[in-house]
Structures are given as structure tokens and as C-alpha cells.
Image 1 (cartoon, helix red, strand yellow):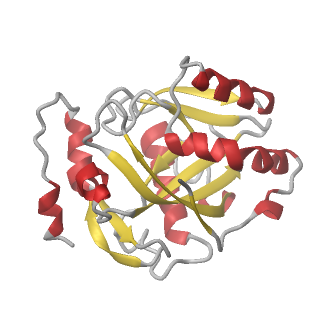
Image 2 (cartoon, rainbow, N blue to C red; image 1 turned 120 degrees about the horizontal axis):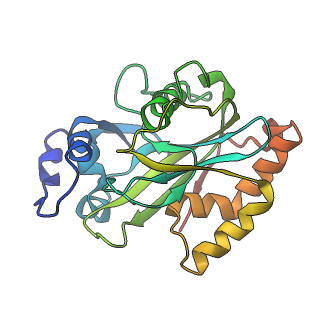
Image 3 (cartoon, rainbow, N blue to C red; image 1 turned 45 degrees about the horizontal axis):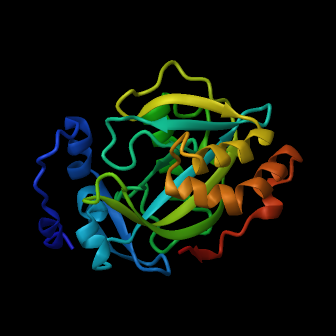
Length: 245
């Protein structure tokens, strides 16, 4: 697969952010098949070029964290305008990738998603500034996996094709400061505001990430209710892999 990564070169004629370009080359993602079996690795750039996605070469592992405060509010972030992939979208607390490293590679897939949860703790600190240990991996529950594909609408060079691990938990979301290269704003969403947010997206008043919208429409309400009722694990479906259109 390392040789294939060269095929993922792209003419970077747009004024992409330098740090985001560095991460595209530096981060080595975990390539998988639709059964979430590891088949190799490739750069983040390779995995997110639509040319590779369209040829079914770039399916990789990802995760989406839904972190709730002690008051039952969902921590949302707005992706920075510096982001190459889906900039300026509101989305769940953190969305990223486990890396092809010993600490984060679950091979074969682990029922507890140990490596994925370690990656989530790393990215909570990198993006939101939440110190490692403030929200330990043990507080993030692996709920299910989804497979989805999406193109970045305003820049069709890039897109997503992921096996996305959904991690849900409660914790202290206080932070000394956001990473502005990753996140421009944070919002605490109340349970009764979810439908309104989805309606705002339909009216074109806000942009949502495609994965957040899919999850919010299908799973998030029942997970949120379970969090509020103190019984999240009743909704655990970690053996499943849901393929979405």
C-alpha cells in the first residue's frame, strides 16, 4: 500500500493551510475492508482523495466522539476554516482517525476498540485542549460502526470513505483553549435543540458534517435519551457495521 500512496499526489494549487497539509502527509491511516479487517495503511492524503475513493482504494478507520456534559448537553464543535476536509461544518465533539501505530491499531478488530479509544483521547487534547486523563478512554463507550462515503461539496478533490467507530460518553469538557487550526467554535447543545439544528441545516442556515447529520437523524436521539436516563449501554451495538448510502 505504501507504493500506492504515491498515486495520491495532487496539484495543490489552492491556498491550503500548511499545517493541515503537513498532517495529510504525516498521519498514516488504517486501511480496512467493509468487514473492518485491516488490509494495510496509507497516508491521510491518499485516503481522502476522491480519485482513490472512487476506485475503492481508500476505505479506512475513523471515529466520532459524542461527549456529553454532566448536565446532559452535547459538546459540538465547528470545524476550522483552515480544514481541508469539510471546513466550517458543525459536527460532533471530535472526529478523526486512529493511526497505524502499535497503540492505536486494533488488529484484529477489538470488541472494546482499545486503540480507537486511545486515539480519541489523543484528539480530544489536540483539537479541544482537553487534557489527557480528564476524559479517560474508559469513559468513552464504543456503541457501533457505520460505513459511509461523502465528497466535500465545494472542493471535489477531497472526500471521505470510512468505517466510523461511534464513541459516546460523559465527561468534563472544560478546556484551557481550542486549537484554532482545528476548531473555530464550541457549542453546548441541549436535547430539545437537536431537531432545530437539523432544520437549520435544511434551510441552509448552518452546515453540518455529513457523518454527524447521518448519525443525528438515525441514532443520536436514542443514545441521548439513554445518557439522560443513565442507561447508555442498553443501546450498545458494537458487533454491527451499518452501511449507509
